[in-house]
Image 1: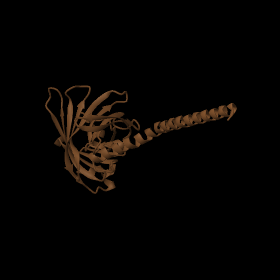
Image 2 (image 1 turned 120 degrees about the horizontal axis):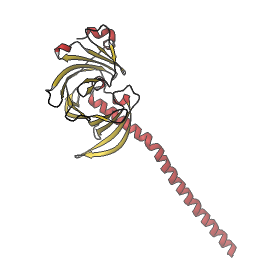
Image 3 (image 1 turned 90 degrees about the vertical axis):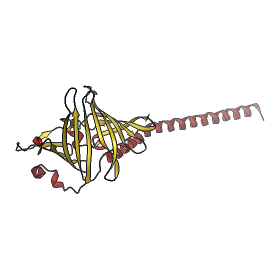
Length: 267
């Protein structure tokens, strides 16, 4: 075999090696770029699934009734207790009725979608209010009337955390618009069963407003749900509201209940 033949074969062999190397590099880069592009979509899908499951843990998707007692405390003041009955259907229709104190019995909040009205017996027409407006203590109207994180926020997974011996998804929820209760939420959800653990609620300027702990999981209407929420003011230490849920039952609630004209008929 002549020298030229050997050189040509070496060149061809080197060319094949370079081509294979480039092919492998190209495949590796392409695969890496594909993962980088596809990962956000996959993570987004996982984040949305986690939030939806946590919503289902907190409340049934079908029509239900639940009684809520809210005890609010402030430094050097006696606790204030208020009680409500909540009727909800499909996460977008809710009626909140004041049952205590007796002097405010008859006041009713109606939510349809993200629109909210309050009816007071001594006022002829319902008054439009905001989800973010304070209801009592550390509780906003939206905390009681609308608890639909999946519809109100765009979620993404920030990280995983281990608390105690349990693994949690830590999610960031960004409001879909300014009409929702909070503009940003950081949300801890247990990985194995989608139990909500805690949340941090932020303002439009990204200031931490309050924190919430989900506690005392009890069996209500077929599954374990948090029956105690502890909401603490992040700006004023020592101020908190404790929401206790009980007497939950599924109800077939007709659509007419969730109309302004029907508010006066509720008791």
